Image (cartoon, rainbow, N blue to C red; front, side, top):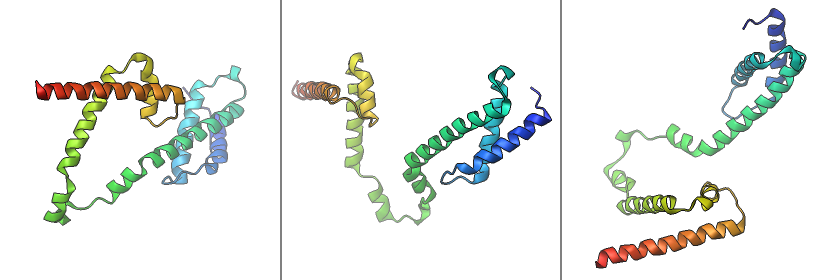
Length: 173
């Protein structure tokens, strides 16, 4: 695909018009501008004259795509902020004392986490297909209908009771 001088001028004009409107924490304006140029060249690939004037099409395309890009970057930044802070402020391992090392891993927490992981795997295994979609949404923190959430909790409660009964039988038997 060949880019004409006229199309390149339109791309520069529209990108310069749009990119200053969008700000994301942790990103420089030039980063957004670069993304806008990439999006503009993607737009050029899908545009044809039947869709209308290139400048109008590019304006609308960049408006929508930059809005989506900023929303996704902000969501990603908010979701991983704590993890990024922990990684960026990581301690040098040579600076950790013996007392701190012993406190880093609590055996009880490790065992408890393993038990919870096993229970989650069993719930995932035994969960009926009819409840799976709502269960995954509930697990992800998405609000669902109270009645459907109640069905899932009831199923899990019944399953856990059965599993705890199996454990007691295994211990007794």
